[in-house]
Image (cartoon, rainbow, N blue to C red; front, side, top):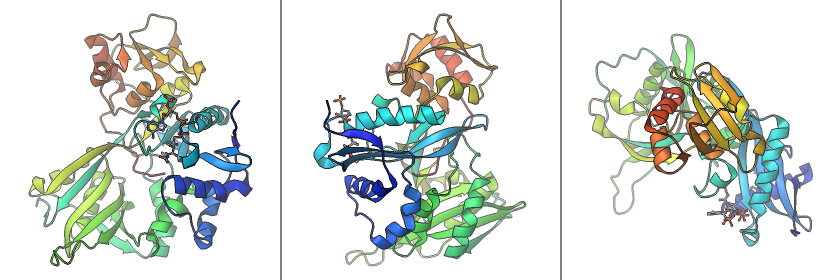
Length: 405
Ligand SMILES: CC(C)(COP(=O)(O)OP(=O)(O)OC[C@H]1O[C@@H](n2cnc3c(N)ncnc32)[C@H](O)[C@@H]1OP(=O)(O)O)[C@@H](O)C(=O)NCCC(=O)NCCS
């Protein structure tokens, strides 16, 4: 028998478990003043803790939201926003026990999917999570003028902090189903993940809003970091783009134009961009923009495989029968016929076998089936079957989340 218990935390345990999470990520627990500002965002509901003799030794927390899937529908999602085990309790199965409880809690709550951002790539595959979106780190060296043929009639304005806190949530709401992989940002998300970054002690970020023919349609959050030093006193500053969201290609280009026009900047860095961000194409000299890295972004877990498969749309091609294996949620096991008309359970012979984490990798359209087969993640498929899988699952737009939690 284990010497700890895993259960939902109580409100009285909120701060202790938040501090535990921050310490497990090697940060400093919040002051009383800061805790007063963020504690409403850390309500006990949806947070699983591990306790030894009444003391917290692990936390796996989540909040409820929705995920946009290919075709534009949204599905209920558990967003796993904090996982940590106290350093003197690691590698004794605490995370495994918390994940098991959390996944079954998601089933009870009717979440169709769960998702998280992973600190390390080796942790979550064993629990059925697969990389479902990827993100690029972009760097644009200045000066980077736009091509003359780029015609952008919209306007950009900078917001004061209070105005940004009041305006951006509803603006984001008008954008959040724009791409597969985007999520709704519920109210408790904002104080911790947005407002704090605008605060002078947080990040001192500025917020720019784009206005197009139909009103406000995009925003950027950024801050400027000096790069000069004693050895390099002339070095210009870096403009770091924290967020960039737009409802239309014109709004996106208009915001890039603004970010690339700020004076006294040597380089513009943007982490967490979609892998198909068009900034290089807008420039007179496309080499001024470089992709300097591509990383995993959203790790997705299909909690209710039939509901998840039924929620998205498919391309037009002959059907394929998938045999899905799920070690932790056995109700998901079985064969599914996927066609352009939808999905149904079947007893027919399978065209291929895959685990639920690999299905999550296919689900939003981030990966082609060929490399997944080559790496042993998809078994039993012919080249013709793989081509059918691609034709059905491919989305045309690269999935992307663009929200950290
Ligand atoms: C990552 C973390 C939560 C793992 O907790 P844990 O209680 O040690 O995990 P478990 O003991 O349940 O490990 C389960 C399995 O995952 C493996 N594992 C766990 N963490 C791992 C890691 N960081 N790298 C590689 N493997 C890991 C274990 O070796 C074990 O494998 P096994 O089943 O083959 O023996 C913990 O190490 C931690 O808090 N790390 C710092 C904070 C952090 O990174 N949090 C995650 C934020 S997304």
